[in-house]
Image (cartoon, rainbow, N blue to C red; front, side, top):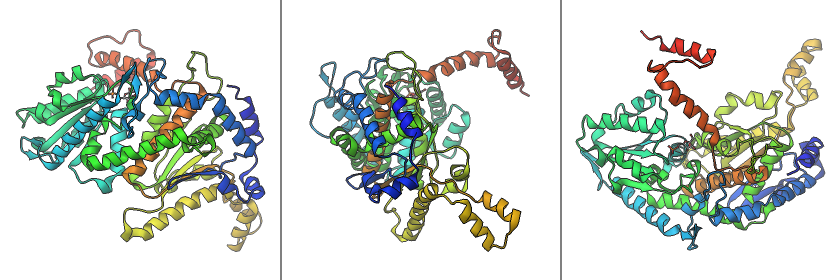
Length: 533
Ligand code: F6P
């Protein structure tokens, strides 16, 4: 794709003030509504010609054809020769989805039913530990086998009526030690979540948990379950086949929450609410497939991303949910977006001729306002912000706090857009009695440049259905951006080198092999770290 036209348009972009000034209807014309969800991108510097250009770029990149290829099970993950079918895990219609000529849907539905039976049995106490009904579930997994369920269990806390759920991910023993401390091994269920069942962090933590449980429980296998594509490997941990929930290699790790990797979430909220979560995602899938590009939420969210990053050159984007229960959403999106689109080689092996996906980061509001918003408002770099907020909270008795939350969210995007000029700042400081050079100096510190882009996603309430919609929205956004960049969003070769080197360094740390051949910096650090009392 030729990115020059986009960069040229972006260089000539109008200010937000000018765009709003010339079009009183801008907010309506530059927002998309789907059902009860509203995506407002009017506070970006995208003008009419820019939007037309972006839409034509998406069309020329073949987004629509590629989208159908994904939904219909074609092997669009070309470097791994795999289909990309997380959408099949939440397919709620009766269509067939063929991979290599075989319909995968009967298997998906069967696993979903097994998960529902198992989670209801855990919740009702029919599946017990040695000491009685399960009180605690510990999900051991990392990356996509952790971030999704960890984020969603927190997000759906008002629906959580099953056993307590904990998450262990880090190979740092502190994680597993702090989590297991205080739990009763005789009433704990451990879920080992790993697509490959080879990930060193997960396998190490699983063995540690098994040893912890074995001190009090005779048959640890009865209190373990496994979620994996490598069903043969799960037996090595003594996990009975009926406790293994398998999935296929056409589900990417960071897209796997919708199937077995969501088991801990299903146990927390129950099969019906999990079903609503899937329905929300399915609803977004249907919208993504059917809506015209300019009225298509994922497409427009992607085009805003492309405009800000590849067009305007803004290297990061902040995800700012004004929703405390979405605390882990920025971390979830970080993996989703950065592991998918953080690549510099196009599908055909050529070098990318434009920036890859952006750095994604964020924290919930209002907390972030008292931490890093300073830079967003007055720093020298522009950080496009993606605000999110619910119309209604889950605490009707605290509606006044929800109003404060919403007011803060809207105030931030307004402040970023309108800013505060020197004249205004000077008037404010003059009122406080300052004059002369001191007035000028103090006023300058209080100037907000404004004209800083943001989008706002408004949803009715953070229900399982809405959470499903939001996650699917971002998944498809990543897809569209990936297609426009011409990359494969579904592999992750960039994580391999570090894993290989860590495997080689472990015996060096243990003193079993020499550090010969290592660079001098690594040797210096090894020398320091090997000194133990
Ligand atoms: O190292 C990256 C990664 O492969 C992620 O893509 C994945 O979500 C995570 O590790 C965990 O992998 P697994 O589920 O196979 O343990």
